[in-house]
Image (cartoon, rainbow, N blue to C red; front, side, top):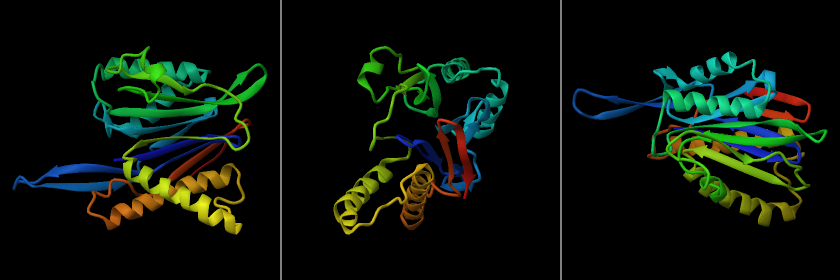
Length: 248
């Protein structure tokens, strides 16, 4: 299982991902046990594009761990000099090797800045199979194929703008942080307490790390398989390019 987050705001792009992967082991008794491994690089920089990419879903592609497969794909496509070109190349490679799958199984968050009319603007692609969360995109795609959906076209982010995309095992996360954000806004902020503070790209990334680590700790204390866990990786991108990339 996985939890990956990408947030676009007036400050830039912040991405975060956990580093756990869950394996199911079938015992001779017929019983199933789960083994959770950490250290998977679900979020990686694309240095030649000054962009970031993260993955959710299937743990292997062509019998290769997905994070290693992705690292190889980035290296093999270092000649592609546009974010759109990279997204389409990933789409076509997944269509070629995975083919048609009629349910959500694997996806990638791809984010960076592109130049539009002399300005550097953020944009976001979600490359995955299955239907898009946006009805207008569903009208133009085959959901059984992998599609490079540009869910957030390049545009100016006004003051106070925040756009979050979450994937993986996010149901508990969504319920929890809906309540937490409501509490921060209605009960904490009137006391003069700001979270995160100071509000900038670095603090936003750390807040995303806090969110994933909080969910990870809840998994450990529950009857759920602790499939979200391990050190959390964050990556930030401004108009000038990648500004930070760290795992802790």
